[in-house]
Image (cartoon, rainbow, N blue to C red):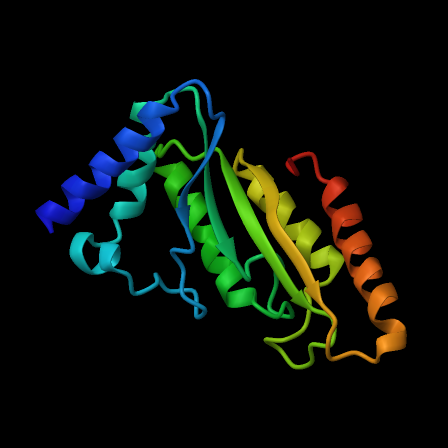
Amino acid sequence: PEQVREELKRHIFTTVGHFRGRIRTWDVVNEALAPDGSLADTIFLRKLGPGYIEDCFRWAHEADPSAFLIYNDNKVEGVGTGSPDGIKAESFYQLLKDLKKRGVPVHGAGMQAHFNAAGVGQRQRCPTPRQVKEQIHRIGQLGLKVNISEMDVRVSKLPPNVQQSAQRQIYHDIIAAALTEPAFD
């Protein structure tokens, strides 16, 4: 564990330090949550425990105090039990809330929006624009900025004559809803 900790710390200090003052925003920790909302089984969790997330943010901040630091994850865009990934979205929010409560220097949240326009069932549907707006709003209430760090809308399982219009509508509706929230960056 001590070797993993030292190598992780060295990597963050080397990378962020090298670009200090030149790169404004860093995705410090990416995809630390499993699909069920628990912490993902990674070498960092196994060797360092859950505190590694906080450590990474503190080291990145120490390496460049002026940098904007983000936690980024997927399937976390829609809030609520009716949301396809409501459990993971709630864990995302709770993780950010806990980091802020403990004074960890996290400034933003990135949401990877990987949608399937033909999705059916609880885990396959796209979240509604309202669910996305509500997630951005409550994360904003924590004092964080929110971005959609990735967005794609798969349409291959739809009939060819509706693929483009369905994709365009989902992009439009999600971005339009996000833009109504002051925390959306």
